[in-house]
Image (tube, rainbow, N blue to C red):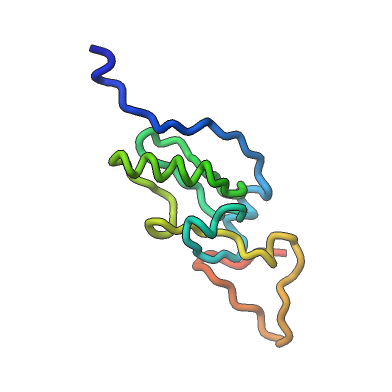
Amino acid sequence: AQDELTLAAPAVAPMVTLPAVSPRQACFAATETVVASAAVGRISADTIAAYPPGIPAIVAGEVIEAGAIAQLAAVKDQGGYITGGSAPGTFRVLVPARISGSPPAHTSSSPPAHTSNSPPARP
C-alpha cells in the first residue's frame, strides 16, 4: 500500500555545490536570459526549484551544472513544474563582465545599460 503513495523520483544523483557569489550579489548583478544548454557553467541569478518535491535544484549565486538541468527536466517530463526561472527552458544568468567585479567596459559618460529588470550592481 505504501508503494502506491510513493512517486517515482528521477534517477539523478544529489549534487552539492558551493556558491560562486553570494545570493545577494547574484540578485543585484547585471543578467541575461539564455537557453538551458547555454546556462551550464554560468552563475545563476535565480533560485529554481521543481515541484514536486519543491527543493531548489539551483540557488542564486551557484554555478549551473548539467546535472541540475537534467534533474529539472526529469521532473518536468514526469508531469511536475518548474518555478523561479525567467521562462520555460531558459535561465537568468549573470553577465560575465560583472562576475569578476571589474567595472563594465564603456566609453561614454552615461551609465552602461544592463540587461535585466533588476537594479544594476552596486559598487
